[in-house]
Length: 69
Image 1: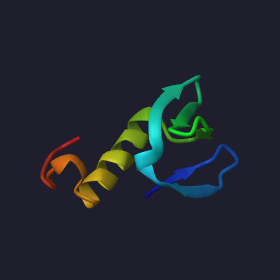
Image 2: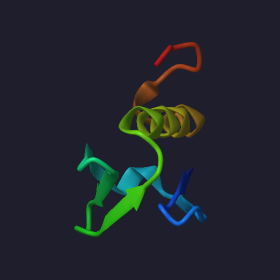
Image 3: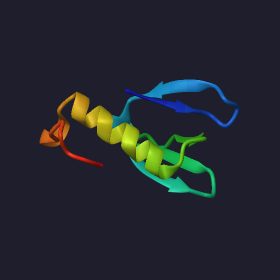
Image 4: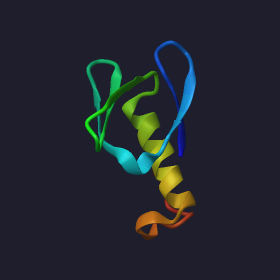
């Protein structure tokens, strides 16, 4: 799970496995596998770092702890 921030400042957790794509319109918009869209304060780069850290934590795709983003 990753912790993100809505535009109103409230934080929420998201299961990163459900993220299909992340775009900037200019706000960062996350599209989930079910088609739902979430708009967050974090940049695309920040979302990517959170997701990679989550994947490392759960050892998805064999990502090693010592790899750099």
